[in-house]
Length: 500
Image (cartoon, rainbow, N blue to C red):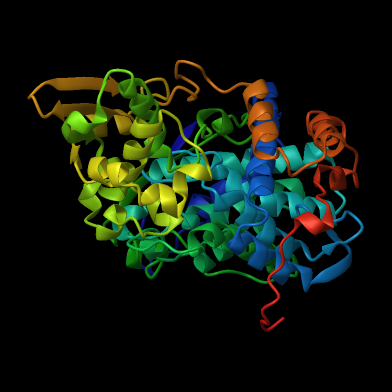
């Protein structure tokens, strides 16, 4: 790996293209490096994972709305919509929009956390839709996915967006553009311009994840994927981009991030080096914000130690800066304590999540978020007794550059009314690659079977799982086989009139 120093240059100083971060990203995207066997298998795992959560969310309102929009953009030789008949095809950018929303809606797919946040699986829907429309092969798609993960993971390691209240999709736009460049075998110049356009158009604020969180949280990464597709299309036609988008005097870094005195260090593989960043990412066992995964496991264990939950006086959670300030009481969001809050808000409230997991000893992607569940008096009592605290020890673990030491856990202190304290801590989720029971291929398959139960017919489920695990051998034009069909009467509609 090479650590690239990225800083702002005044316009009067010419920064050669070869010294710009966007060009360095473009070079590794166009290098046709040898694929790593384990990276290929993990990419297949993540396609299965995405399909699981997408099918489970097909009838949730944001997904239905996004699908209605895509249905208005038919294309004879286009891409395929999750759940919809393979006989119907649509413009790839609108398929990316709808399928991306389906993947993101339940907040239940993969994650990577470092200087910033990310859900790298968000790269897959736009890449798959373009691959279907352009008749690419299974290996082409795998190359694109592995590049996209490489770029997003390393941008997340090097550049913090949330410090400036910029949403993490600003790293997703460039990674999708880079992945598309690899998959379509574009040259470095074209990918360079596309990466810059994609970044320029995907900068937005973190208000989408603050206070009363709306359905836009599910749409945001799908929007970034759609914009990246359009950016690549434009530059393939010879159009350029704002340059240098990272280092320029009025660039994203200069005007939106750390400013003109900023110095970022972004690691990237050498040109031609095998890309393995996907192996550093991790999926979710539970449908909740990733930093709550270890705490759900902790709550399940603590339930066995607290014989009478009515005897709880208070619960203190000592954790990292990110966990405390984003999903904890440090966020100062009253909505995180409100039983009437949206599902998206509850998903970002560690106080709610821990209370429910402690009471139930389990977590369910639907049942744990129902209005009835959130309004249960016993739950509210525990929920409002919880307070989070930043502990520098946990913040240090969160930022540890060694994947084997990096941790997203906490220490929990439950104080009972009689003064007794019950204390437990856990570094990382059980399902984490370095957890007590890491997710393997069978776990991904089981997750798929669980989430698609009563939605898919067994024949279609078996067909998809067999096909995706044979992805390396799919020939050009065969990627339509990765779509999953659902009976038409099982798909909800939103017939409210829009523009399209």
